[in-house]
Length: 279
Image (cartoon, rainbow, N blue to C red; front, side):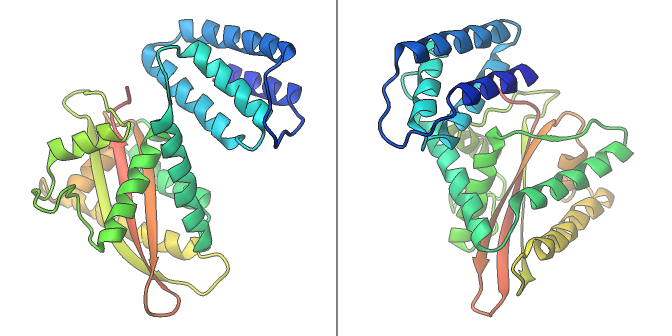
């Protein structure tokens, strides 16, 4: 992965001028595109198809981050066309990335530092897992969109629920799996597990310019509720089982906040998606 960042840095160094207007690829740019693509192809040969897909998502995310710089954006686009000739369009991925940006902006508008919050959430999980000699979880951005989207859906419905349709059973595995697939999340079957979804709704009070710590305090309370399930039987302990399942490796945290009618009080919906691994 370090090689990827080196190549990206080279690209930024060579194309350090900002272009707000329409920019056309020239012959020098084409040489750069060919060099970058060649390096990527060397890396891809050593990787499996799953990692190739992760690389595609990463390139698209970098491209989207620099969409205001037309030169960099166009160079990325040409690299993608060569590396992924079977892909005519990447609208779904770009739409997901844009939506994630919007979700994070909503959190910022409520004085939440999302990076700080999600790092605490991950550390809580990994402290539990490490105490049990289990591998640590890592975040995977493919789960980013799905977890945010489901938190936002619950918020809009004013209802904490796993139900994709209102008449579904409480936890309809097939419906949730299809919903995840439709949102570009395909978890690989590993020792009879694929994915799990944990949700909760809570509230916090905050009058500061930064409400991250207040939200984190209540997230820690939610996590304690999950952890205390270890004394229960299935399915009442489903949240705890997701935390300690040795075959899950990837997670992501999605949060959606709603201001209440009472001043400085906020409701929030939280979704954590766990995945064995991703296609």
